[in-house]
Image (tube, rainbow, N blue to C red):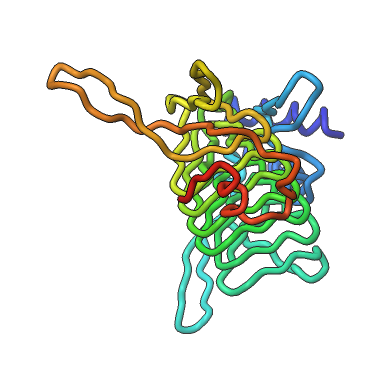
Length: 272
């Protein structure tokens, strides 16, 4: 069945006139339902690393095209959009605190906690993860199990370009308040990001915990403890400080996975 859906999606993406045919709209809606239930993912882990399924992203883009705009009223509020919202949180085993919003087509595993926050279509949020107040999980972002997205965290979304990888936060990570992770950056298992760390594909992630610095881009190694930093860069107008991220060490065995961010950073005599 999945192969048939993929073929239909590829055909419709190449020829939007096919969206007039119920065969194709049915396939699109079936794919979004599978993504909503977590049986299909925009990106999935494999033995060789994360694999982006471009055709699933195409289905999401096509879904926007076939949905009709409509008005919702919850007095005194009014909303005008074409995308449905998730519901039946009790049966999903998800705690959703007012005013948490998750769009239909986003998967929320059991024991996820949504404080007033936002989860967009195509996202995957693993079991036991906390999406804290005013945090946002962008379209197609993949969040693992037991993750804490602290207050105001911004996890970027991606639908286009199709081959672009979504942001991936692996199991057991702690993402500190007001962090921003975008452009398909991968934060590997059990890493800790201190408050205000900003990661893009071009951000230098510098391991300063050893005798010589090691520079990464687009990936935070597993169990790293990361804080905001800066380095000096020369420009025609002079030398200026440019933001980066500093790996100051690895999570230690003494740091229990349920510890607070402050406890994890205290082991390195850092307060942020």
